[in-house]
Image (cartoon, rainbow, N blue to C red; front, side, top):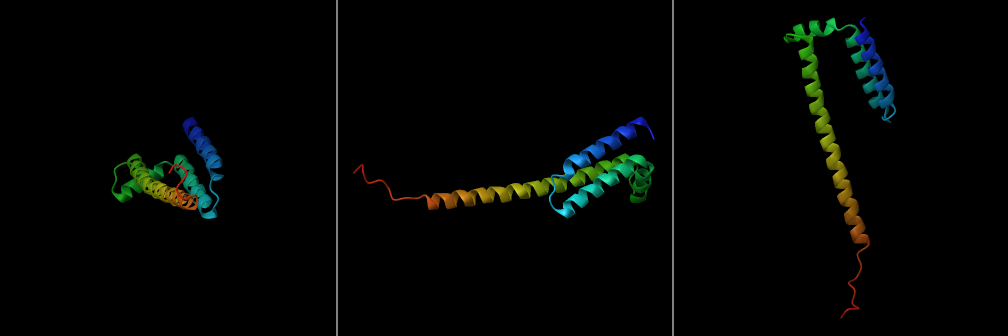
Length: 111
């Protein structure tokens, strides 16, 4: 292994320990642990990406990783967009409930 691979593995492990605590649900933690372990595996055995890319009809392993990143980013974008819409709807609902609860009769002292 090269020095750069050691640095990448250390960075991936550091990110794993930092981000693993942000996920409360077990399936989320397991997914990210699996994702980071796959990343470490591909860093150590980088020739596998070339073999897999050739099997899928892609010329280089780097292209396969880039295409996978683009697809993964697209799904993350859709997921975050959905979460933002849910949060916006929650804020609108709370503001409406608060406005209805605090609505009073108009002031009649000025007439």
